[in-house]
Length: 74
Image: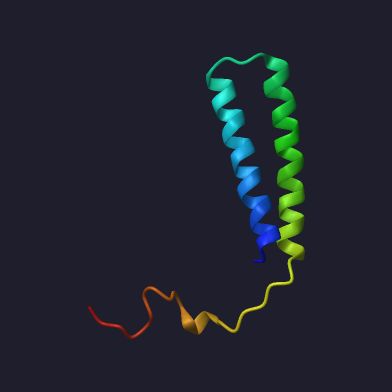
């Protein structure tokens, strides 16, 4: 993913963590509600950006995980 898609992933995560903290600390309902609505809209936009991102790779399922390649014995 390009930096633009990762920006939306990180910012959406931070907003939703903020909603959790605000609801735990008994913020006013209207603040929690509005931040929740903004967070939900950000989730929809984040999914759109990630799916429409022009990301290509040469890896296949045969490459498995880079940190644990197939055939490596420990």
